[in-house]
Length: 383
Image (cartoon, rainbow, N blue to C red; front, top):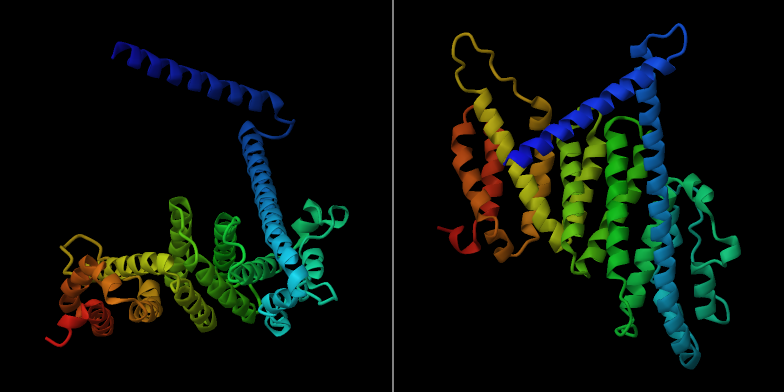
């Protein structure tokens, strides 16, 4: 015990010495005409900017590594397809890649990046290989990747998922790496793009709201991809964290003209919830927020003791909660009875909160009652 106390004291002493050393260094290095405090604030701002630049560079490198992994995986799968195509005259490979994203799908709200479809040549497998993995000498470097827009990177991820889905569905690659890890990383990157786009749209920085349609298509592809893999725990946790961010963006949008953004975000959430692993998490997170808002509304309408300030109703979250109600309704109706039974404890909490709110917030209580009814097991609804 004495050793532990001595160690803590030494750690605190070293920290104090380090702080004192930094303070003296700042004072000695300050330029003439500037106070030590101003110089310290300048250095802090400079360090923060440097950290942001490093973080941005790390994110770009991470995306580049993911793209290289995608290329490598497709190269392996396509090499096997090419070997098989030599005896089948390549007809099956052409059929596989006819399922790729169509030109019309990719050109809608296009960002201008290269999303051309795979061209057909007399040797289809060679054409696919050459168009998917460019030679090393012409592979875009970090600087060119850094210039890619988010929409361009998203389009490339979408093409990868579409191509990988076609190859995995061919039934020829059962003995090979099915690429679950790369698919999971790609799906997480796409969900992150959806979050960033709606964050900008919610803050009024996106400009043309019609650009969000591309992220709706991306959400569908993510759900299809994650439905085919067994997500690892860390992947599930990252996806759940981003779903929480999307729900908070939905509930906290205070823009006056927000219907288009909210409607698109709602549709994206419904599409993402189409994957069973994301649907369960999304239902729990959404219902928890509805219950939390119900408790907030109940507290706000209570009689306030004299001398205390009444709690203000968060009208922004209240208004946006109806988008969340609609999202939950669609997700619940798409779930099986067994999946609904897993949410029994949340259903009981909703049932408890309906009646107390029916006088002050009748519309909110009505929607809660509807959601609570949908969560009830089918065998008890008629009783």
